[in-house]
Amino acid sequence: MTTLQAKKREGFTRAALTEIRTSGSFPAVVYGKGVESKPVSVEEAEFIKTIREVGRNGLISLQVDGSQHDVILQEYQQDPIKGFIVHADFLAVDRSSEITSQVRVDLEGEAAGAKEGGVIQQPLFELNVTAKVSEFPESVTVDVSELSIGDSISVGDIRDKYAFVIENEDEETIVSVLPPQKIEEGTEEGADEAAEAEETDVPAEEETKEA
Image 1 (cartoon, rainbow, N blue to C red):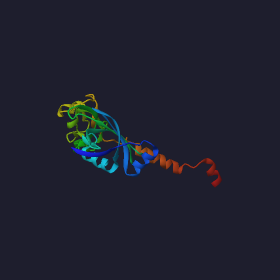
Image 2 (cartoon, rainbow, N blue to C red):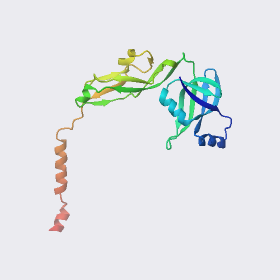
Image 3 (cartoon, rainbow, N blue to C red):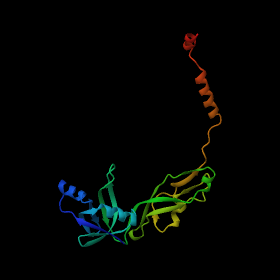
């Protein structure tokens, strides 16, 4: 399991927060199973590295001044302009317990219909999944290679392929292949004719002045 170091926070003044950020860290909190809410600080570079390794829903061994907690990243805020981490919440969990969270949907393969000019449409980019913490998936992969124009894959089509529980409704469409968009007949001709009319249509007053 990937380890992430954290330090217990003692000061909560603006000056203390500025000192944390100046040192390259950010404030966070740990709470959950068997843990009293505990404010900590985490080094931003190590946090980003850890999340890249374990994924958004991966299990992390959080070390806080000698104590260890199995946690998952519950939530984090990022500055919308500068991009630095503002704050994070770590949820302490039991490895055998189940959690429900959103999981990214990744499409795999090239749809047969796309090769014929069809347009891939993906209405559902995330699924609500319930699974054991130790078995929680980073993403759900959906193979679209067999989809022809007019075909689609819904939640019900993939539900039985995985050991975890997908909480979404069966009829929710994950991906579909739409027919190629066609320009209506006569549209281009009409546009050309209109353009020609604009060029040749001179107001009566201007004709009189020219005369």
